[in-house]
Length: 341
Image (cartoon, rainbow, N blue to C red):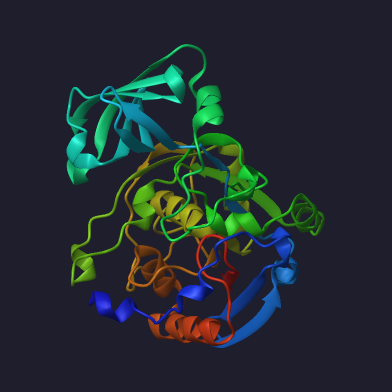
């Protein structure tokens, strides 16, 4: 398939720059794949589309304040975005300005609270970086780091927690699993009280999720890999729903990618595992585990738009996106949501 088949026109003013005041009062577009209908809702009414015995699968990763501003020994300003912990205090990082940060360069952050040395240049221009410090690394990040907001968000985030889900637990992401940002503790409680199981997976989201596809033929694109794990108790909840003929609803494309990576091709059942995934889902893919998907509106020509087009049919998705533009939905990370059922 050609990359241009996943393009659409988006006025810049529809890119949400700040989160809505109440998480669950964002808009929700409901796509019925069978009936080919589009319904406009408020997110908190998503409970009406979930049935007792269904299993809602969410990603409980926590975003670290991975954007760091520092200075070289020469005094020149530099910027780091931490992508992935490689081992110990060694990280893969995006650095700017890249041409000035060669192996051996040393950088100071937070007036000496944190020091870094560039060890190597990795594929794609990222750097292997060794950090040194006194104390606890994540506590230092909390003091001097900023949330690594996507490049299309230009407003400052006043409250750090608004780029976290309310159930974020395990630190390690360079970006939020944004479909989960719409849930409140109250809504999650109502969902459980209705008899819907809630299962967790943990996938640490990399900044590669924002990297554009450049290949003309989408099949030639190479996906980045991300680390994930799923526990026994959560696998059992998912398998129980499958056994009983109930739906597995993935909250976000990250949860979806984990489930489809580990699902048995015949049964759709999953097992507890810790691994990496570089699964690439685009039209033609046959889903093994996921029955429905809660997701935000994605960038044109992105792998995430390709994933939802694999689940709901590309023409139907583009029709829905064009309708979202006409109805002035809010797009991307702080934007409105879609349920594909």
